[in-house]
Length: 471
Picture (tube, rainbow, N blue to C red):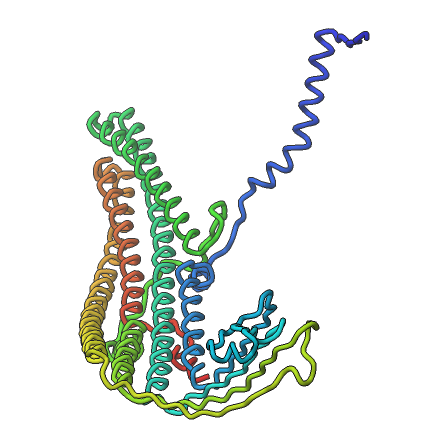
């Protein structure tokens, strides 16, 4: 068998390769560009909260915990309804069972000592219904425990909601602060470069010293690192915000809400009253303590009697040959019974159970009191931090105004030969520091207000989660 090969000149091969390369680039380039094109998204603070609530994994877990607690309520109330059981057995006797006769009776029957019982087929079926008439408080205690546990779980879900909102706000404010730092750093670098240009011209005219030129160069060089750091911090802050909001890391965010001032807080006393009334953590612990109290009642009810009403219908039959019995080969029976049981002595098991549940109740009450005091302290501390941040903000605003005016005068004095480049450089450094302090003060005000909201709790809830139980 012969093999034919086509050989092309080197120049022709290069032209063909170039055409194939261009063709493949024409096919692949649009797809790659489309895949790498970032999505730009305008994001407000309220939208960031909603996205965080919709995409937080821990909050989704708490939602499933609420579903499980609701199922526990249903299961606890199931014993109040009649319990119906159906049982049956259909047997094929390969060898029938037998019973043995006494020797005297066997001799009277011709020496037969064993007799087979039943038939080839055997049927046993029964339907049983049981209703609890009196359980000495067991059912009411168990149902109450499940309901209180459900209420506690709902408030825990509300607590997670508050934490998710707080996390989203902190991430949003961090991006705003990082953006301000970038703008301040870039502005400072531009001023430093302008000062270097002016100083270089002054040095050429003999109006500046070599020291002033060296300092201007060092300042301009040192301004490059803060710009790089500020940009990197902005990237990290944006990544954190995207993670909290559940957005793709390639998304380009345009934050629409500025890092503005906040309103002064209320007095401490009304805030503490609000905290005591609607704090999700306190409400969850209160319902948990109530559930523990009901567990004590359940343990005590274990000493009481139980009264049950039971009804049963049974069907039995035995036959040979056919798979199903005929009319006279099966029989049914029905019965009704009133059952009563009362534990008299259980080896002190009930007593030990009651003591254990009482200890759990005391622990729950102490935990509630501890958290209440910590919450009150947290509200006071957050209130003080917000007041301090607002007081510092006023001074930072005035500081920026003073630094801007000082820098303006330094530039005018330098242009008129009444100041040196060092004075302009010092004014530029002071202006940059004042702007950075103002951004930090605005950030501190917003984060302090968010912390106070979290300390008070419950402000992000549409209503009382415990109301869902009565629906």
